[in-house]
Image (cartoon, rainbow, N blue to C red; front, side, top):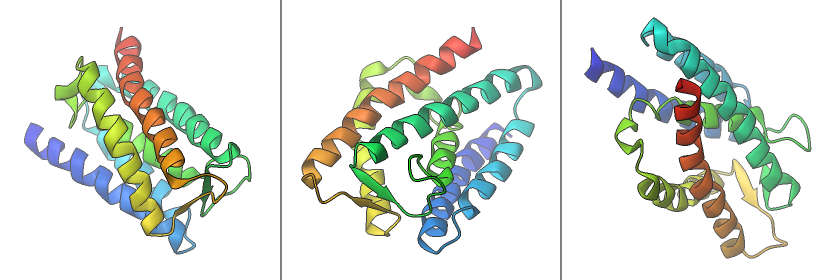
Length: 175
């Protein structure tokens, strides 16, 4: 059963990520968030009952933190998102991605717990790759007022800090 949950955790998040990006690009900005909610409902259902409250609190933290982080990138004029609802706030599909990703921390990425340097490097490398992928599909655009390299450095720093911070939040919430 653990292996099945691991596979569900990895593939479920990937499916949600694509639904968020492709939904935003195709004018269905709520497709990804709805799929993420379904993914999370199943995810939480299969967790041991005693760990559900801390997982839910972590996911709520990620929703707020991720929305604020991406809203900052938006309001600094670095990124332009498809599928926004409010001009000053990152779209719901971005929030859904943060929450879906965070649902993998204590499960698919459990082996990275306590490995700050690896978390930092992964955030620095894969944060920008994720945004570049979203950009290549047209879900986000980089502002023309800054060089792309500057935007990628800011994203790398954002994710370099965020990945370890989410692990720290998870540990704090569990205690």
